[in-house]
Image (cartoon, rainbow, N blue to C red; front, side, top):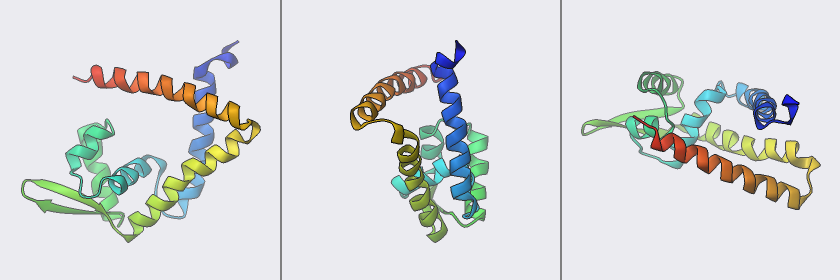
Amino acid sequence: MFRQTLAYSSTVLFRSFSEYTSRRLQRLGLSRGMLFLVIYVGKHPGCTQSELTEALGLDWGYGQRSILKLVEDGFLSREKRGRAYHLDLMEKGREAFDVGHQVFFDWDREVLACLDPSEHAQMLALLEKVTQKEDNKRRCTKP
């Protein structure tokens, strides 16, 4: 009976996506968790550390440690302008952004190959509805 729950399905899919992403990012020396930071900076060049931390809902300390690790590993540049540090992708970061961004589409194509186009569209529309509700709930309950 539990196999017919969203919780079960999302857990199985999360595990599959994590394994797939880890394999694809391993050659770049980037973890799945760090990928989201690289993607955010790639889509918001020049953002500040606090903008990134808030947008991704990260704990401040974890966000700062992650950013410093990405700078140390050559994925991000971190430049102080005024009172804030601004982030940009370095060459290694641009490569990781391209590969990491494509991972989402490639995994979807593999996993959703069993669905016809109308099923695919319907499923994504329903998941978008649920995701928006959860995102709004998270934003409204922030301290």
